[in-house]
Length: 133
Image (cartoon, rainbow, N blue to C red; front, side, top):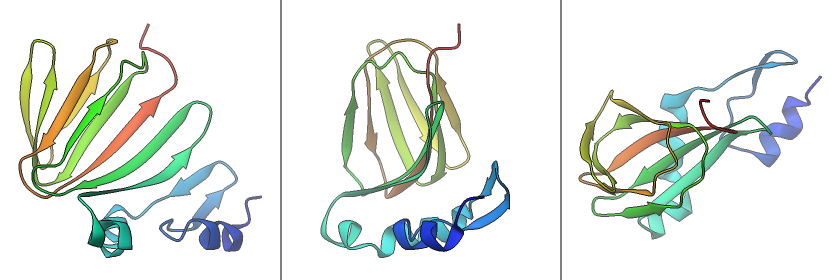
């Protein structure tokens, strides 16, 4: 059994609702509010919260201010990006894709990519360990 009291002290952004040993529930709307209350957000152009990290899967909630840019290396891992708020431009070598609230993008290839926040943006990045093959 996971100690939810300890988890909440170590990770104050978790909604520590443990349904069973292998089932966690996270309240994304609450996390979206909390990510913008953090000092890192108040002082900078971005903030991120790793809400789940395991050998097979990682969930990262990210907030970017308008104009913030992130360049990603080729990782070889399958990932998805779900835009929860705002608008951003996603770039690969040969494509530019405008993402808006509610859009989900998946990347299955080992491509260099970057993104630029067109407006204040929050997205959920889900990274799997390995490729789709």
